[in-house]
Length: 84
Picture 1: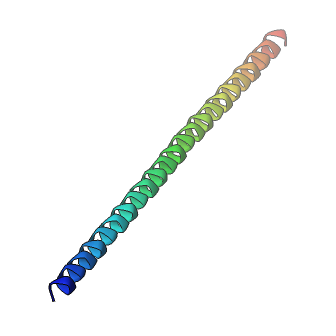
Picture 2: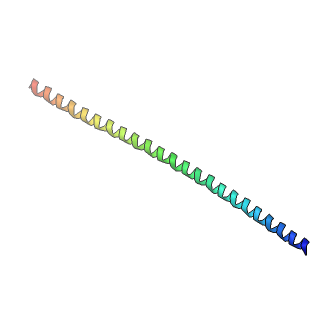
Picture 3: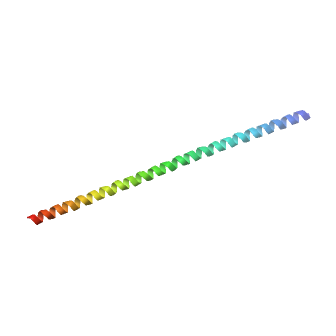
């Protein structure tokens, strides 16, 4: 009887340890996965930020070119008016 009780106790301890280790491994894996997802999202955020800066830069160049063009047209028209 005593032998059976020890055996059952050993078995329960084994199951508990095994379950605990598996749970721990699962939690660790999940944590690692979440960390990777977070890092990935962070990089996407940085990438979007750079795209936004790039678009802003292109827009400024476009505005500058447009202003320059308008200014040159104005000068050209003015010079033309002076000559006539």
